[in-house]
Image 1 (cartoon, rainbow, N blue to C red):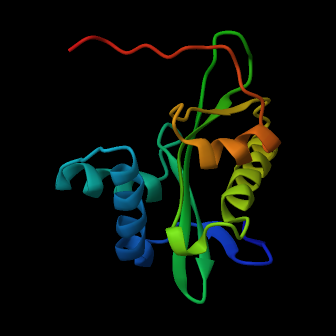
Image 2: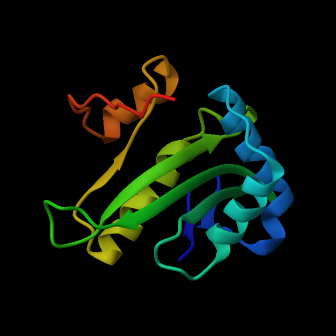
Length: 153
C-alpha cells in the first residue's frame, strides 16, 4: 500500500532501495551512537524484504526518486491482548528533509498498517534527549510512565 504525502511518496521498501536505505539507517544508528557489523546490515535488509510474519517490515519516504525517510515496524503477540500489537522500532528522516512532515507521514502510515492488521496498539521508544522528535511524538502519541531496563553486560 502506497500513500501520497504532500512532500513524499510513502511506500514499502524494495530490493532496489538498498543503497539509499543503508545511508538512512546509518544516519539513524549514528544519531544514537550505535554501530552494527556488515552482517547485521545484510540480514536486516533481507528480513525487511522477507515474508516471515515474525520479521520487521519497512516503509520508506521517497522524494524525487531518492529515499529521505524510513520506518521499521513489527507485529508481535502481547500477553494482555488477543490481537498482535505493533512496535515501531526505527524512524528516521534525512536531515535535509526534516520539517516537511515526513516523520509524521511515516508514523501515520504505520498506524494505517496496524489498523489494517487489526493491531489495537502501536508503540515506540525514544531517548529522553531526542527533543526534536519528541515534539512530534507528543502531538501524535501519548507518553507512558514506563522505564526501560536492559540486561547488564
